[in-house]
Length: 362
View 1 (cartoon, rainbow, N blue to C red):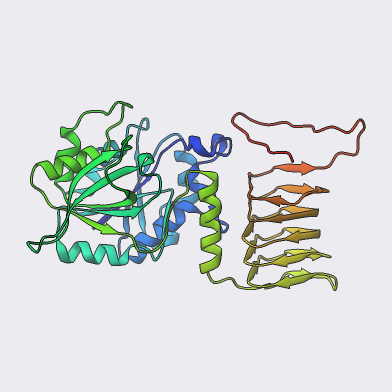
View 2 (cartoon, rainbow, N blue to C red):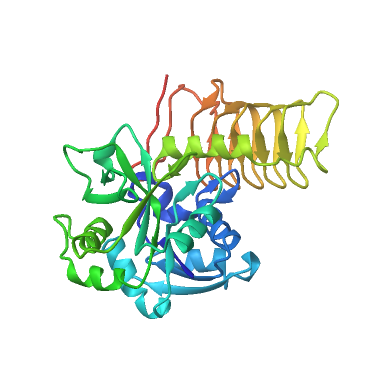
């Protein structure tokens, strides 16, 4: 079995960060989201990976390399434009060479990995298996209707609809799919949707219409599509709650600094009259001075936070936050960002912001 990881989208919901960075490389708990997917596939015994890339290919390739650091072998598959998930499957046919495969959306996180799902697929031998989760807003997802078991056999998928205005169920497709070779005929049989893309829901529906078995698996733990700010922050909270944190390590703390709860402080981290209340992860070389870092915060490498308070936030590498009076909460701050209090008069807010930025002032 092989793996197909989709990493070519434009990430419009996370702009302006994704103008300069692939959305799959935005970190959760200081690890790029994409790495969680790669590690899940490798843990399930899948080491031959194809990664579908687009405009951000150079950045993805620089981060992942040939896959050897993960115990995998990676082949990059170029997609000329975001033409839909089924199109990504279509361009991977030669790479798959007739083998079964797992398709994993590179900006998704799934509790507990996919090892059990892969084993279930191998034992049941359906033609496809889809993961489903109950959601409060199914109109924003691909939605599945199930054919209930009447004692004649297993539950099967009856119908799939992409982003229906009036959903008939609350079961959304999670970003992991398992297929045999029959999916390649289906992706060639469908037509682009109203938004001009080849939808994977249409291709799976074609499998159903042709009498192939599509097996549903309901996700029991948490699942996150990290395409939006709130979902990124929730994923960060969940991962920090569940991952082992290694403690203060070689960090330097002065007598006035305090650590409470579970933390991970990277090499060369320095605390001066700072308080860190976990779960928190801080990257190497970061300096915290007269600062409070509250729970569920991830801070990247080589940052400086002074005379400020931060919690429930993600701060990427090489950023500075100084002399900010109000606590920063629920924020995603990109690389190399500088947030400072100006002492110039007259007093005024002064911004230099990129397209699609968002600032809230209270």
